[in-house]
Image (cartoon, rainbow, N blue to C red; front, side, top):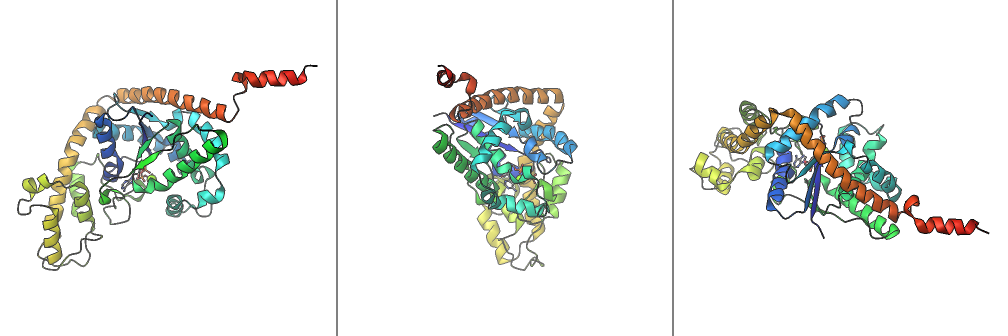
Length: 361
Ligand code: ATP
Ligand code: MG
Protein backbone atom coordinates (compact mmCIF):
# COMPACT_ATOMS: atom_id res chain seq x y z
CA UNK A 1 0.00 0.00 0.00
CA UNK A 2 1.24 3.55 -0.76
CA UNK A 3 2.41 5.66 2.13
CA UNK A 4 0.66 9.01 1.95
CA UNK A 5 0.78 12.05 4.23
CA UNK A 6 -2.00 14.59 4.68
CA UNK A 7 -1.80 17.42 7.17
CA UNK A 8 -2.44 21.13 7.27
CA UNK A 9 -3.04 24.36 9.11
CA UNK A 10 -5.78 26.94 9.38
CA UNK A 11 -4.88 30.30 7.83
CA UNK A 12 -6.00 32.26 10.89
CA UNK A 13 -2.56 33.80 11.44
CA UNK A 14 1.11 33.31 10.77
CA UNK A 15 2.54 30.02 12.01
CA UNK A 16 4.30 29.89 15.36
CA UNK A 17 6.89 27.78 17.13
CA UNK A 18 4.11 25.57 18.55
CA UNK A 19 3.20 24.55 15.00
CA UNK A 20 6.87 24.09 14.31
CA UNK A 21 7.58 21.58 17.08
CA UNK A 22 4.09 20.07 16.95
CA UNK A 23 4.05 19.30 13.25
CA UNK A 24 6.08 21.39 10.77
CA UNK A 25 9.53 20.16 11.82
CA UNK A 26 8.36 16.56 11.56
CA UNK A 27 6.79 17.12 8.15
CA UNK A 28 10.05 18.37 6.73
CA UNK A 29 11.92 15.35 8.14
CA UNK A 30 9.31 12.98 6.69
CA UNK A 31 9.41 14.80 3.36
CA UNK A 32 13.18 14.45 3.18
CA UNK A 33 13.18 10.82 4.36
CA UNK A 34 11.98 9.75 0.92
CA UNK A 35 9.74 7.13 2.57
CA UNK A 36 6.46 8.58 1.36
CA UNK A 37 4.86 8.14 -2.03
CA UNK A 38 2.80 11.31 -1.82
CA UNK A 39 2.65 14.27 0.55
CA UNK A 40 -0.30 16.67 0.71
CA UNK A 41 -0.05 19.80 2.85
CA UNK A 42 -3.27 21.76 3.07
CA UNK A 43 -4.03 25.36 3.94
CA UNK A 44 -7.42 24.82 5.58
CA UNK A 45 -9.16 28.05 4.60
CA UNK A 46 -12.64 26.51 4.45
CA UNK A 47 -12.19 25.16 7.98
CA UNK A 48 -10.88 28.56 9.14
CA UNK A 49 -14.07 30.16 7.81
CA UNK A 50 -16.21 27.95 10.07
CA UNK A 51 -15.38 30.25 13.00
CA UNK A 52 -14.44 33.34 10.98
CA UNK A 53 -17.39 33.57 8.61
CA UNK A 54 -17.67 37.32 9.14
CA UNK A 55 -14.00 37.96 8.47
CA UNK A 56 -13.07 36.44 5.11
CA UNK A 57 -10.41 39.09 4.59
CA UNK A 58 -8.45 37.74 7.57
CA UNK A 59 -8.43 34.26 6.07
CA UNK A 60 -7.54 35.57 2.61
CA UNK A 61 -4.57 37.53 3.96
CA UNK A 62 -3.25 34.61 5.96
CA UNK A 63 -3.23 32.06 3.15
CA UNK A 64 -0.06 33.58 1.78
CA UNK A 65 1.45 33.93 5.27
CA UNK A 66 1.00 30.22 5.93
CA UNK A 67 2.38 29.37 2.48
CA UNK A 68 5.46 31.50 3.17
CA UNK A 69 5.88 29.82 6.56
CA UNK A 70 5.70 26.41 4.86
CA UNK A 71 8.37 27.29 2.35
CA UNK A 72 10.53 28.94 4.99
CA UNK A 73 10.73 25.82 7.18
CA UNK A 74 11.81 23.76 4.19
CA UNK A 75 8.67 22.22 2.75
CA UNK A 76 9.64 21.76 -0.87
CA UNK A 77 6.99 21.99 -3.60
CA UNK A 78 8.98 19.49 -5.66
CA UNK A 79 8.35 16.88 -2.95
CA UNK A 80 5.18 18.07 -1.17
CA UNK A 81 1.91 19.26 -2.71
CA UNK A 82 0.96 22.52 -1.05
CA UNK A 83 -2.69 23.32 -1.74
CA UNK A 84 -5.72 25.36 -0.64
CA UNK A 85 -8.67 23.42 0.79
CA UNK A 86 -11.50 25.55 -0.66
CA UNK A 87 -10.24 24.96 -4.19
CA UNK A 88 -11.03 21.24 -3.93
CA UNK A 89 -14.83 21.11 -4.06
CA UNK A 90 -14.73 17.29 -3.91
CA UNK A 91 -13.94 17.63 -0.21
CA UNK A 92 -17.29 19.25 0.56
CA UNK A 93 -19.10 16.54 -1.36
CA UNK A 94 -17.41 13.85 0.72
CA UNK A 95 -18.41 15.69 3.91
CA UNK A 96 -22.03 15.71 2.83
CA UNK A 97 -22.03 11.92 2.53
CA UNK A 98 -20.02 11.33 5.72
CA UNK A 99 -22.50 13.43 7.72
CA UNK A 100 -24.97 10.56 7.40
CA UNK A 101 -22.57 8.33 9.32
CA UNK A 102 -22.07 10.54 12.40
CA UNK A 103 -24.50 11.44 15.18
CA UNK A 104 -24.90 14.82 16.81
CA UNK A 105 -24.14 13.33 20.23
CA UNK A 106 -20.89 11.87 18.88
CA UNK A 107 -19.81 15.33 17.69
CA UNK A 108 -20.75 16.81 21.06
CA UNK A 109 -18.34 14.45 22.80
CA UNK A 110 -15.25 15.72 20.91
CA UNK A 111 -13.07 17.24 23.68
CA UNK A 112 -11.05 19.54 21.38
CA UNK A 113 -14.19 20.98 19.82
CA UNK A 114 -15.71 21.36 23.30
CA UNK A 115 -12.71 23.39 24.47
CA UNK A 116 -12.71 25.48 21.31
CA UNK A 117 -16.43 26.25 21.63
CA UNK A 118 -15.79 27.51 25.15
CA UNK A 119 -12.77 29.55 24.09
CA UNK A 120 -14.77 31.25 21.35
CA UNK A 121 -17.85 31.85 23.53
CA UNK A 122 -19.91 29.86 21.06
CA UNK A 123 -21.91 28.03 23.76
CA UNK A 124 -25.19 29.77 22.95
CA UNK A 125 -24.85 29.73 19.18
CA UNK A 126 -22.44 27.30 17.58
CA UNK A 127 -22.20 27.67 13.81
CA UNK A 128 -23.21 24.33 12.26
CA UNK A 129 -20.11 24.43 10.07
CA UNK A 130 -17.84 24.77 13.08
CA UNK A 131 -19.64 22.01 14.98
CA UNK A 132 -19.15 19.63 12.08
CA UNK A 133 -15.56 20.47 11.19
CA UNK A 134 -14.29 17.09 12.48
CA UNK A 135 -16.35 15.53 9.66
CA UNK A 136 -14.80 17.86 7.13
CA UNK A 137 -11.40 16.89 8.47
CA UNK A 138 -12.27 13.24 7.86
CA UNK A 139 -12.96 14.21 4.24
CA UNK A 140 -9.59 15.96 3.95
CA UNK A 141 -7.74 12.94 5.29
CA UNK A 142 -9.62 10.22 3.41
CA UNK A 143 -9.81 12.11 0.10
CA UNK A 144 -6.08 11.62 -0.28
CA UNK A 145 -6.09 8.08 1.16
CA UNK A 146 -3.68 9.36 3.80
CA UNK A 147 -1.97 6.68 5.87
CA UNK A 148 -0.05 9.11 8.08
CA UNK A 149 -1.18 12.37 9.66
CA UNK A 150 1.60 14.26 11.52
CA UNK A 151 -0.12 16.70 13.91
CA UNK A 152 -0.17 17.99 17.48
CA UNK A 153 -2.01 16.31 20.34
CA UNK A 154 -5.14 18.46 19.98
CA UNK A 155 -5.85 16.59 16.75
CA UNK A 156 -6.23 13.16 18.40
CA UNK A 157 -10.04 13.38 18.63
CA UNK A 158 -10.21 14.36 14.93
CA UNK A 159 -8.22 11.28 13.97
CA UNK A 160 -10.48 9.10 16.13
CA UNK A 161 -13.53 10.57 14.43
CA UNK A 162 -11.98 9.95 11.02
CA UNK A 163 -11.22 6.32 11.81
CA UNK A 164 -14.81 5.78 12.96
CA UNK A 165 -16.13 7.25 9.72
CA UNK A 166 -13.77 5.06 7.67
CA UNK A 167 -14.86 1.91 9.51
CA UNK A 168 -18.53 2.77 9.27
CA UNK A 169 -18.28 3.66 5.59
CA UNK A 170 -16.36 0.50 4.71
CA UNK A 171 -18.72 -1.72 6.67
CA UNK A 172 -21.86 -0.23 5.10
CA UNK A 173 -20.66 0.32 1.54
CA UNK A 174 -17.70 -2.03 1.16
CA UNK A 175 -13.95 -1.56 1.55
CA UNK A 176 -13.22 1.84 0.01
CA UNK A 177 -11.53 4.24 2.43
CA UNK A 178 -8.13 3.99 4.11
CA UNK A 179 -7.76 4.21 7.89
CA UNK A 180 -5.11 6.80 8.82
CA UNK A 181 -2.59 6.75 11.66
CA UNK A 182 -1.81 9.84 13.71
CA UNK A 183 1.87 10.69 14.11
CA UNK A 184 2.40 12.65 17.31
CA UNK A 185 5.67 14.35 18.30
CA UNK A 186 7.94 11.98 20.24
CA UNK A 187 9.07 14.71 22.61
CA UNK A 188 6.37 15.31 25.27
CA UNK A 189 7.08 19.08 25.37
CA UNK A 190 6.11 19.29 21.68
CA UNK A 191 2.70 17.62 21.98
CA UNK A 192 1.11 20.89 22.99
CA UNK A 193 3.60 23.71 23.40
CA UNK A 194 2.31 26.24 25.96
CA UNK A 195 2.04 29.95 25.19
CA UNK A 196 4.64 32.47 26.36
CA UNK A 197 2.10 33.40 29.05
CA UNK A 198 2.19 29.86 30.46
CA UNK A 199 -1.33 29.11 29.18
CA UNK A 200 -2.01 25.54 28.13
CA UNK A 201 -1.51 26.01 24.38
CA UNK A 202 0.31 28.45 22.18
CA UNK A 203 -2.45 29.49 19.82
CA UNK A 204 -2.87 32.10 17.15
CA UNK A 205 -6.23 32.94 18.66
CA UNK A 206 -4.78 33.60 22.14
CA UNK A 207 -2.01 36.05 21.24
CA UNK A 208 0.65 34.20 23.23
CA UNK A 209 2.85 33.14 20.33
CA UNK A 210 6.39 33.36 19.09
CA UNK A 211 5.95 33.43 15.32
CA UNK A 212 8.36 31.84 12.88
CA UNK A 213 8.47 35.19 11.08
CA UNK A 214 9.10 37.31 14.21
CA UNK A 215 12.20 39.50 14.04
CA UNK A 216 15.23 38.73 16.18
CA UNK A 217 14.23 41.63 18.45
CA UNK A 218 10.59 40.40 18.78
CA UNK A 219 11.78 36.96 19.80
CA UNK A 220 14.19 38.37 22.39
CA UNK A 221 11.49 40.61 23.91
CA UNK A 222 8.99 37.75 24.10
CA UNK A 223 11.50 35.36 25.65
CA UNK A 224 12.65 37.88 28.25
CA UNK A 225 9.05 38.45 29.40
CA UNK A 226 8.08 34.78 29.45
CA UNK A 227 6.22 33.09 32.27
CA UNK A 228 8.47 31.11 34.65
CA UNK A 229 8.04 29.99 38.26
CA UNK A 230 6.17 32.79 40.09
CA UNK A 231 7.69 31.67 43.44
CA UNK A 232 11.26 31.91 42.18
CA UNK A 233 11.85 35.47 43.36
CA UNK A 234 15.45 35.65 44.53
CA UNK A 235 18.23 33.94 42.58
CA UNK A 236 19.04 31.85 45.64
CA UNK A 237 15.45 30.51 45.87
CA UNK A 238 14.96 26.96 44.65
CA UNK A 239 12.97 27.01 41.39
CA UNK A 240 10.30 24.75 39.90
CA UNK A 241 10.70 23.13 36.48
CA UNK A 242 7.19 21.78 36.17
CA UNK A 243 4.89 24.30 34.49
CA UNK A 244 7.88 26.58 33.94
CA UNK A 245 7.44 27.61 30.32
CA UNK A 246 11.08 28.52 29.77
CA UNK A 247 12.14 24.98 30.62
CA UNK A 248 9.34 23.47 28.54
CA UNK A 249 10.67 25.44 25.56
CA UNK A 250 14.20 24.24 26.30
CA UNK A 251 12.84 20.67 26.35
CA UNK A 252 11.32 21.31 22.94
CA UNK A 253 14.20 23.16 21.28
CA UNK A 254 17.58 22.71 22.94
CA UNK A 255 20.15 20.29 21.60
CA UNK A 256 23.35 19.16 23.36
CA UNK A 257 25.47 21.28 21.01
CA UNK A 258 23.68 24.43 22.16
CA UNK A 259 25.29 24.00 25.57
CA UNK A 260 28.80 23.82 24.14
CA UNK A 261 28.08 26.91 22.06
CA UNK A 262 26.05 29.16 24.36
CA UNK A 263 26.32 27.87 27.93
CA UNK A 264 29.51 25.82 28.35
CA UNK A 265 29.30 25.76 32.18
CA UNK A 266 26.64 23.05 31.79
CA UNK A 267 26.94 19.82 29.82
CA UNK A 268 23.25 19.35 29.22
CA UNK A 269 19.71 20.35 30.09
CA UNK A 270 19.52 18.00 33.09
CA UNK A 271 22.44 19.82 34.75
CA UNK A 272 20.80 23.18 34.11
CA UNK A 273 17.48 21.99 35.52
CA UNK A 274 19.19 20.51 38.54
CA UNK A 275 20.91 23.83 39.35
CA UNK A 276 17.65 25.75 38.93
CA UNK A 277 15.83 23.41 41.30
CA UNK A 278 18.65 23.62 43.85
CA UNK A 279 18.62 27.44 43.81
CA UNK A 280 21.32 29.89 42.74
CA UNK A 281 20.38 30.14 39.06
CA UNK A 282 18.48 33.22 37.90
CA UNK A 283 15.67 33.35 35.33
CA UNK A 284 17.50 35.93 33.23
CA UNK A 285 20.42 33.61 32.56
CA UNK A 286 18.11 30.76 31.52
CA UNK A 287 16.06 33.09 29.33
CA UNK A 288 19.17 34.42 27.60
CA UNK A 289 20.16 30.85 26.82
CA UNK A 290 16.68 30.05 25.49
CA UNK A 291 16.85 33.16 23.33
CA UNK A 292 20.14 31.97 21.81
CA UNK A 293 18.69 28.52 21.17
CA UNK A 294 15.57 29.93 19.48
CA UNK A 295 17.53 32.43 17.40
CA UNK A 296 19.77 29.60 16.22
CA UNK A 297 16.73 27.61 15.04
CA UNK A 298 14.79 30.56 13.61
CA UNK A 299 17.54 32.49 11.77
CA UNK A 300 17.70 30.16 8.73
CA UNK A 301 13.88 30.02 8.59
CA UNK A 302 13.71 33.82 8.60
CA UNK A 303 16.34 34.05 5.85
CA UNK A 304 14.53 31.55 3.61
CA UNK A 305 11.24 33.42 4.11
CA UNK A 306 12.87 36.67 2.97
CA UNK A 307 13.89 34.94 -0.28
CA UNK A 308 10.38 33.64 -1.03
CA UNK A 309 8.84 37.03 -0.13
CA UNK A 310 10.64 38.48 -3.16
CA UNK A 311 8.42 36.54 -5.57
CA UNK A 312 4.86 36.34 -4.24
CA UNK A 313 3.24 35.52 -7.62
CA UNK A 314 5.43 32.41 -7.71
CA UNK A 315 4.15 31.38 -4.27
CA UNK A 316 0.56 31.59 -5.56
CA UNK A 317 1.68 29.60 -8.56
CA UNK A 318 3.02 26.86 -6.30
CA UNK A 319 -0.33 26.73 -4.49
CA UNK A 320 -2.25 26.60 -7.76
CA UNK A 321 -0.19 23.72 -9.08
CA UNK A 322 -0.50 21.88 -5.76
CA UNK A 323 -4.28 22.44 -5.80
CA UNK A 324 -4.54 20.97 -9.31
CA UNK A 325 -2.74 17.81 -8.20
CA UNK A 326 -4.82 17.59 -5.02
CA UNK A 327 -8.08 17.99 -6.96
CA UNK A 328 -7.22 15.11 -9.22
CA UNK A 329 -6.47 12.81 -6.27
CA UNK A 330 -9.66 13.81 -4.42
CA UNK A 331 -11.79 13.36 -7.54
CA UNK A 332 -10.57 9.79 -7.87
CA UNK A 333 -11.58 9.00 -4.29
CA UNK A 334 -14.93 10.74 -4.68
CA UNK A 335 -15.68 8.61 -7.76
CA UNK A 336 -14.90 5.46 -5.75
CA UNK A 337 -17.09 6.68 -2.89
CA UNK A 338 -20.01 7.34 -5.23
CA UNK A 339 -19.58 3.95 -6.83
CA UNK A 340 -19.57 2.28 -3.41
CA UNK A 341 -22.69 4.23 -2.41
CA UNK A 342 -24.37 3.31 -5.68
CA UNK A 343 -24.88 6.88 -6.76
CA UNK A 344 -22.94 6.50 -9.97
CA UNK A 345 -26.10 6.12 -12.09
CA UNK A 346 -24.75 7.00 -15.49
CA UNK A 347 -21.77 4.65 -15.41
CA UNK A 348 -23.83 1.79 -13.97
CA UNK A 349 -24.81 -0.18 -17.08
CA UNK A 350 -26.29 -3.01 -15.04
CA UNK A 351 -28.68 -0.61 -13.36
CA UNK A 352 -29.84 0.86 -16.66
CA UNK A 353 -30.38 -2.59 -18.16
CA UNK A 354 -32.20 -3.85 -15.09
CA UNK A 355 -34.53 -0.86 -15.08
CA UNK A 356 -35.24 -1.09 -18.76
CA UNK A 357 -36.02 -4.83 -18.49
CA UNK A 358 -38.44 -4.08 -15.70
CA UNK A 359 -40.43 -1.82 -17.99
CA UNK A 360 -40.25 -3.89 -21.16
CA UNK A 361 -43.28 -5.98 -21.80
P1 ATP B 1 -6.40 28.29 15.73
O1 ATP B 1 -6.32 29.00 17.05
O2 ATP B 1 -6.91 29.12 14.60
O3 ATP B 1 -7.09 26.95 15.83
P2 ATP B 1 -3.87 26.97 16.03
O4 ATP B 1 -2.73 27.77 16.52
O5 ATP B 1 -4.56 26.03 16.95
O6 ATP B 1 -4.89 27.98 15.35
P3 ATP B 1 -4.13 25.08 13.85
O7 ATP B 1 -4.05 25.57 12.45
O8 ATP B 1 -5.47 24.77 14.44
O9 ATP B 1 -3.37 26.16 14.77
O10 ATP B 1 -3.20 23.78 14.02
C1 ATP B 1 -2.26 23.39 13.05
C2 ATP B 1 -1.38 22.26 13.53
O11 ATP B 1 -0.47 22.71 14.53
C3 ATP B 1 -2.09 21.07 14.15
O12 ATP B 1 -1.39 19.90 13.78
C4 ATP B 1 -1.97 21.30 15.63
O13 ATP B 1 -1.99 20.09 16.34
C5 ATP B 1 -0.60 21.93 15.71
N1 ATP B 1 -0.48 22.85 16.85
C6 ATP B 1 -1.15 24.00 17.01
N2 ATP B 1 -0.78 24.60 18.16
C7 ATP B 1 0.14 23.79 18.74
C8 ATP B 1 0.91 23.84 19.95
N3 ATP B 1 0.79 24.86 20.78
N4 ATP B 1 1.79 22.83 20.21
C9 ATP B 1 1.93 21.79 19.35
N5 ATP B 1 1.23 21.68 18.21
C10 ATP B 1 0.34 22.66 17.89
MG1 MG C 1 -6.44 24.93 16.24
